[in-house]
Image (cartoon, rainbow, N blue to C red):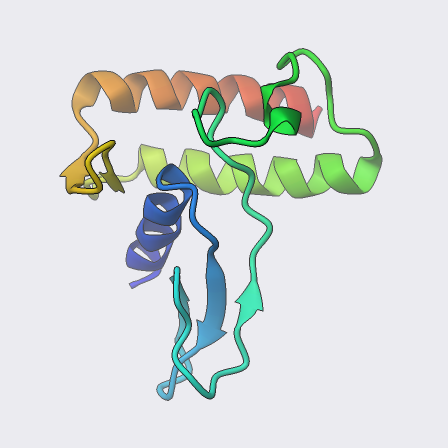
Length: 126
């Protein structure tokens, strides 16, 4: 179930949508683009994917520039480690493509994403 939650967060990340986190009636943590009405949902601070056409200009800064302060670095480090865990799992990673259709991440894209995330873990967690 935890992988499913991270999978939902990854899908939302790929689509560059707002991601919310809440606890359902059974006490399980859920992630999604639209929280249920009447829940105490928290908006997650998920950075847009690099190279995204709709990403804000701030995200298009050179990748060599580290996060500004230690709190931002720690947050980014935690995010990258979670992405690394998700990509290292056996479950398929689903995302929205340019047409808005849900598709599985193929082996080549998964390998490229793993490499990119591994580099980011080195950069932000050291």
